[in-house]
Amino acid sequence: MQYVSTRAAASAAASSSQQFSDILLGGLAVDGGLFLPTAYPQVTGAELDAWRQLSYADLAFEILKKFATDIPEADLRALTAKTYTKEVYKNARKGEKASQITPLRVLEEGENGTRLVLQALSNGPTLAFKDMAMQLLGNLFEYTLAKQNAQLNIFGATSGDTGSAAEYAMRGKQGIRVFMLSPHKKMSAFQTAQMFSLQDPNIFNIAIEGVFDDAQDMVKAVSNDLPFKAKQKIGTVNSINWARVVAQVVYYFRGYLSATTSNDQKVSFTVPSGNFGNICAGHIARMMGLPIDKLVAATNENDVLDEFFRTGVYRVRKSSETYHTSSPSMDISKASNFERFIYDLVGRDGDRTRALFQKVETHGGFDLSGKPGADGDEFKLVAKYGFKSGKSTHDDRLNTIRDVADDYGIVIDTHTADGIKVARENLEPGVTMIVLETALAAKFNETILDALGEDAERPEGFENIEDLPQKFVVMPPDVEKMKAYIATNTGL
Image 1 (cartoon, helix red, strand yellow):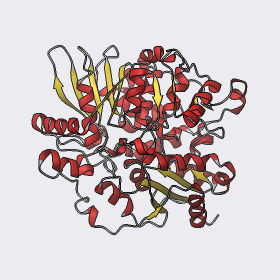
Image 2 (image 1 turned 60 degrees about the vertical axis):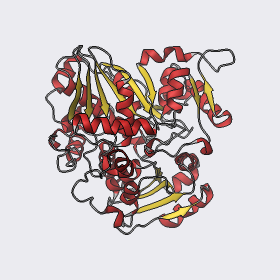
Image 3 (image 1 turned 45 degrees about the horizontal axis):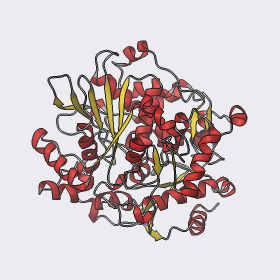
Image 4 (image 1 turned 90 degrees about the vertical axis):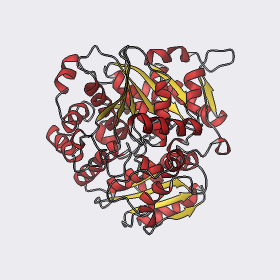
């Protein structure tokens, strides 16, 4: 399996391709693009049938071995077995089996065969879906660094959940330091405490005076400074990292296989979406041959993705136009993973993809609607890939949290509420709609208290996390100052 940048010119694509281990520790390609396989591996109906009875760890091995062909299969199987255990993913709700890792719960079942199903993805150590990929990434990093006798300085940005998932996956790992940016005072108290309370010497939390997009832009700027990146051994765990995305592909397969009994049954997924990484994994699963009917992107008030899937216009917002909402992990107005889908949408044309995303930097977006003056007409092809979208607001969030608590006895977090609200608008007869859970409600207790008048239940060990001592620094969104901070603390 070879990988190529989304911005590689056709004449250079073949000669510049790399294997899985070559791109694992990096992030952005040297030309600023994102990595994708030169062709998506295909899954047969016979394989799907055989995979129905597998454990999550074994399913992960079967899928990942199609992408990580340069890692010996015995080693890869050991890594997935080490990662996906009920001891790691132990925070299941009552009535859910932790051993299933991502158990399904049927919420609604209609007479016309419509079903609304919730897929639990938040049973890991930080109570968010990011653990599903990040725990594997930590083990892959440690494995690869040990083989190379090397070290890695992870530089990432978070709107809330990526940071804590990365830090919990990397804390104490040999040869790894984590420098994690987050928007100052724009995460929930629980999210902030999860990150800042870590005292491990290899963890560095930096609160940026700005919004998430400012932090994400800094990560890209540092990643594009190739001499600095090489000298400081910079890698990333954001969803621009290919291994993050491919690990998330696994739970789409698990969701489909758990919700169906035969491969001719239809399933759609609704995914709370901000940076497009989670739903991008669904796109890849569909391209591999998983029988996904629709992929529905659910946004909050920061609706750049909903706008594109309704109109064909991708228009990033300025920092001043980005709303601080009660589903803060989706307070993103520049979806860094979106480039992977656009690359497929424009026929895997690296030159065209590069030109479109250069226009994002110079003009704030692009227009594929096909209307006079537009940059292209590829929006007409979006339906072929099964994408739809919808938007949820704060009032929608509160109402959905109340409805789900009243009707099903489940307390959901704010982002999952966005997903359920939009999923209900896109139900179709005979199709199971699976909503991907984002986090446990305890991470956003301020809004739960507002919606239900009582605190969300907390798993054991998280009762007083906000009272723990916190370790972090506050910095402006200044790339040069950030480079100096990293260099000082790596000693390289």
